Amino acid sequence: MAKGKWAQGITPRHFQWVINDKLAICERPGGYGVNHRKVRRQEEIIWIRENNFLSVISLIPSDHNLHSYDELGVPWRHWPFPPSVDPEAALGQIYPELQTLMETDGKILMHAEEVGDRLAGLLSGYLRWSGMVPVTFEAITVVERILERQMGPEGRNLVTVAEQLLNQDPAEA
Image (tube, rainbow, N blue to C red; front, top):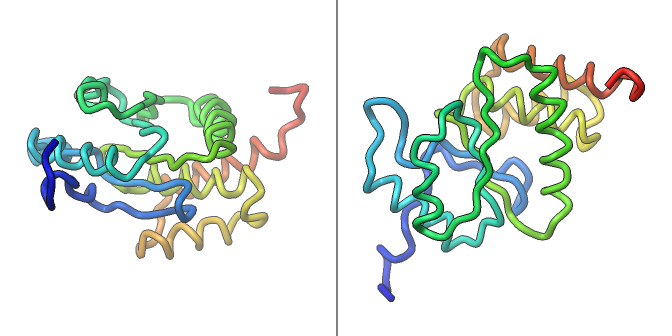
């Protein structure tokens, strides 16, 4: 087995811990669109593997390059979250599944094409929905501080949807 710096891989772009040593986010390994690079994807997936992530959750709509995780021995899940999806239905599925994963002892890495408003809103909403941050505007502020950028209307809308799910009567679900 290869040794040294290159055997460790490279940290995925825009990698950030949302919950220390438990839940992290990043840009799609290898980048997205015209900036996608196969070698970079491999190096970033090696880093994920070498840092013992329990699972990678891909939120990208397509299943492009998911086979790369299999090739490098990294467990993954595909939870497509395109802009066209009904956010209430999608988050109603994603949050309970994420909660189940969070109850394990492993580290989870979640990625979208880019670290943008949709991912920020989904995560702020999860912090609110799970009760980790009990006030909606505080959940937004926490993620804005982590990402060092302000969340736009699309992300804030997702947090609102998460709050509605939290307040929904279980009989309605």
